[in-house]
Amino acid sequence: MDWNALSLSLKLSAITVAFLLPMGLIVGRFLAYHHFYGKSLLQAFLAIPLILPPTVLGYYLLVLLDGGSFLGHLLETLFGQSLVFSFEGLVIASIIFNLPFAIQPIQASFESIPREIREAAACCGLSPLKVLLKIELPLAWTGIVSAMVMTFAHTLGEFGIVLMVGGNIPEETKTLAISIYDKVQAFDNQAAGVMSAFLLLFSVMAISFTYLIAGRYQRHYA
Image (cartoon, rainbow, N blue to C red; front, side, top):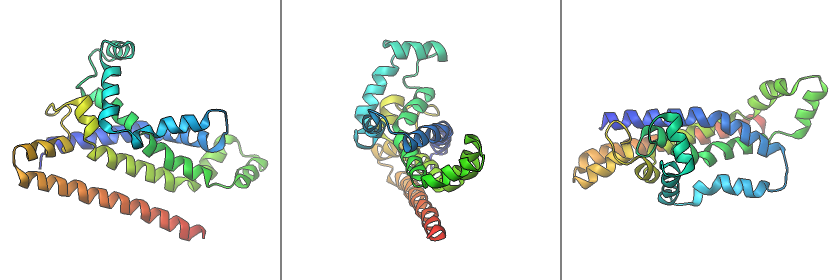
């Protein structure tokens, strides 16, 4: 097991979830409760990472984050370094790539809350903030947990966009998926097998946990 790569992958996954959780709550709730011109286009844009090959998305992010672009130059000034082939750049790429995994489950959970419940809570004198904290979040918790688990697991095993934006720098951008690729290239099948088995087991556990909480929620409110 490449412990440095595993540690870096876990760190990247945790930071990505930390950024995307509040973003997913804000954007997912907004999309669930509001109808406006161009909503379908916005949802399609946010879902692009689901269908676009990671190498293609990674290429465009590589161009945007490069110091030669306006955005890249601005970010380079703010961070004091180039974001291309750096951990900071990898975090930005990971956040963008995981947007649909964080937003869509949360949006679906908010959409499942009957409008009458929110209206009744408002009629009882609860402020919008109290309605969110006492009514909406407890009812939408399955989508929130699913978004966190899926985002973490997807980040942990991502390969294409990591290689495009971060490269293969030990202890900087070399994640577990990249380490597996290196081991295969070096014909170290035993090490590659161990790390692949770990990712497989973690993925199965993550998906099983998501289905488990969804099933308990359905049985509870059936």
